Each structure stands twice: as C-alpha cells, then as structure tokens.
Amino acid sequence: MSEGIVARVDLRGVVVLDDAGGLTFCSVRKRLMDPGARLGNAIVVGDRVTVEEETVVTVAPRRNVFQRAAAGAAASGRLQTSAANLDRVLAVVALKDPPLSEGLVDRFAITAEWLSLPFAIAFTKADLVGAAEVSAAQALYARAGYPTFVVAAKAGGGVPGLRQAIDGQRTLLVGHSGVGKSTLLNALIPGLDLKIGEVNAKTGKGRHTTTAATLLRLDPGPPPTDVIDTPGVRAFGLPRVQPRDLSRLFPECRGHGLCRFSDCAHHAEPGCAVTAALAGGGASAARYAAYLKLYAELEGGAPARDAIRPGGRAKSRPGGRRR
Ligand code: GDP
Ligand code: ZN
Image (cartoon, rainbow, N blue to C red):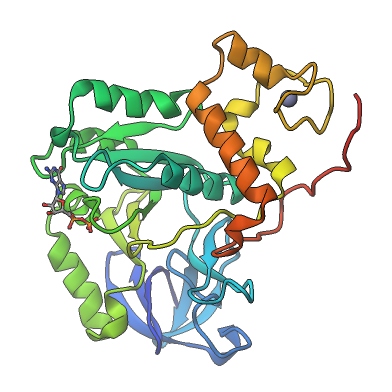
C-alpha cells in the first residue's frame, strides 16, 4: 500500500505521483467511479489516493475543488470537477496579444470566490506594453486584495518573483490559449517538456493526454510546490449566482461597513456603504462598474451557459429587509 497524488486522469486510469517523485499508471477500483462509470468527477487531479498493486483503492476527502460546467452540458447543469485540494487559482492573462479582457478576469475571480478558493492574477507579455498599462492593470485588482504578478516570460522577466510566491503551494493555472501559459510554465519549470513527456509516457500518448489537466511538481518540499495546468478555456461563463449574492463575491463590496438594508444591491439605495465608499474614493470605480455590469447580466439570466452551481454558499435572503 502506498500513497500519492493524482497527476493526470485518463479514460482507463490515473497517473499517481508518489512522495518520492515516481509516476505510476494505476487502474481504479470500479466502486470509485461515478454512476455513469466515468472517471471524470470520481477522481481528479490533485486527489490524494492510496494505491494497492497499481490500483487506486481509496480517495481521501477533498478540502476543495475547482469546477465548471461539463463541455456541452450547460443545459443539463452537469458539473465537471477539474482539480482538487488547491491552495490557489492563478489566472494567466495577457496584457496584449490577445488584449486584456477584464470581463474574463472578473469571471475567473468570481468563480474562485464562489468556490472559496484564493485567487491571484499573472499578467503576461509585459514587454509588449508600457509601464503605465502595467500599473493600470495591477491597480484595477489591488483593492480586491488579489495578488498580481507581472511577467514577460519569454525573456524570463518577473518569473522568479512568481515562483517564490507559489512556493510550497498547489496552484491551478487557468487562462485562454495564446496568453503565454506554456511559455510561463516553461520558464517556471526547467525541463517541463521532459516532465510532461514522463506523464504522457505513463498514460500512453493519445487524444486525451493533451487536453487533460496535469499536475506538475516543481519541488518535492516539504511542503511540495505543484502547479496544475488546465487546457485553455474557450468559454468561461459566470457561476449560476443570484444577483443579490454577487456582492459577496466582490471583495471590494465587503469591508465598508453595513448598508442600511441587509440585502442592499449597492445600486442607488439610501444608506449604501459601498456607494459611499466609492464617492469617498475608497472603492474602485472600474470594478464597481464591472459589478453593475455582471449584476445586470445575472438579472437578465444571460450567463446560463457554462454555469456553476456549487453548494456551500449561503442562499439569497428575502428582499427588502431593513436592519
Ligand atoms: P499558451 O497558448 O497560453 O500556452 O501561449 P504560448 O505560451 O504558446 O504563447 C503564445 C504566443 O505568445 C507565442 O507566440 C509566444 O511566443 C508569445 N509569448 C508568450 N509569452 C510572451 C512574452 O512574455 N512576451 C511576448 N512578447 N510574447 C510572448
Ligand atoms: Zn449597499
């Protein structure tokens, strides 16, 4: 009997990384599959498992998960869990080529908040923009308290700082393709191709090995430093949040004291602590605008695609309650 962390999930089984750094392809006890006989949500990358004779026999309870709607299953609301036991979600977004999409960053952030996962942002391709643009991007999320990193990974700029910040943690990388995620990973992980090659060799190179999330160990620690690379996300809709729950997912809306109404939507209600903070310069106007935009979107029911509906968050409260 040995223990390890799932580094990759395949159609036929999983690749387990043991504490000594060894990779083993293991089959999975049938009772650990989900009812559809799929490995997908039953065991995911980051799961702690015990292995007996190259078969996974137990999966440890997860401390958290990263989920999104299963591809093409938005209507059914089926969720896909892509990773477990994370210390943080790092959104990788380019400052240019493709242009910075604040809407996308907001979606990543809200999803992480909804799942109660710490969130940070890596701005890439810093060499393509001026210093003013870099500071503006950072300033946008500073009040939210999200750590931001600026990298020009092609030339190695900013990579040591990011590496230090993720030391001893397990970080899930999310981002559209083309933002420079591979370049960043290559700068972070010497011999990356070799490591991915090793994992691939265990699963047998195939159609699924290039699209699956992969856990890569940067340092054995303890505590180990891991990154989980996820395939480029094409559509990334909002979690299925009630409009009134949105303010909870915007850190800027918190910490300004109590609004007069306990269910204040922070629009134009009297006695609103958020709009008061905004007027006093204590909140970011750009992020407040983003909040209003998303609020309207949720009210319109637009983001039904790619919805996420995890449990564990408080239900929305009945309206109109005065404190
Ligand atoms: P991925 O799809 O997110 O993995 O993106 P890649 O790492 O493959 O990079 C996409 C393109 O952006 C490639 O042409 C890279 O050479 C380029 N790129 C990546 N990082 C940087 C950077 O820091 N600066 C510049 N100028 N280009 C970059
Ligand atoms: Zn308010």
